[in-house]
Image (cartoon, rainbow, N blue to C red; front, side, top):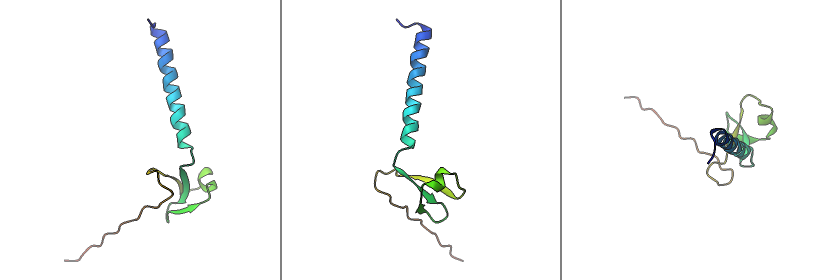
Length: 78
């Protein structure tokens, strides 16, 4: 059977492999850079440089780069 030390090494290696796999998935082509205030797609260099007001947007639903529609609510005066 496995010794305690060997089990720790195998477990640690599996955790590192999992973390590396998840990290590489985050850097895939399924994201783009947007200007946050207007949700306008811009060149990726803005997000790569960490420019304030720009953020990475993931393609989480698996479709092409579609934008979310913003809903607005109106308040009635009573």
